Length: 141
Image (cartoon, rainbow, N blue to C red; front, side, top):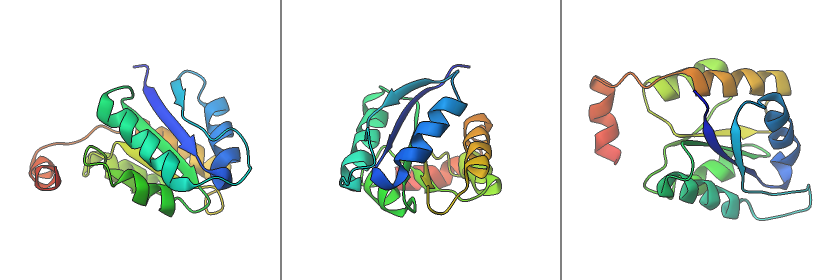
C-alpha cells in the first residue's frame, strides 16, 4: 500500500525530516515545511499536519522537532488528530495497534537516525487492532 503522508518539522527537526524522506522514497510525501534550519515556530507545523489529516489530504502524518514534544502538543489541538511522541519501536507499534495514532512525532535531538527509521517503519506497518481499543478511541473522538 502506498501511503500518502503529511510531513513537517520546525528548524530543530529539519535534518531528520529530510533523511526520513530520503530513506522512504516509496511514500507519497506531502511536505508542509520547514525548508531549512532557520528558526521557525513549531506550532505552525503541528497545525499544518493536523489540518492535512482533518481534510483527508493525508492518510497519516509525521512531525519532527528537537524533542517531538512541541509538535505533538500542537497537532493534538486538532480533534481529528491522535499524535504520539515515540522514542522506540515498541511505542510506535503499540500507539498504532492500541491508540490508532494517526500522527507520529519524533525528536531529532532525542532519537538517532537508525532508530527513527525503525520507528517510522513500525508506525506505518502496524494496523489498529480495533475491538476493546475502539471503545477507548471513541471516548476521545
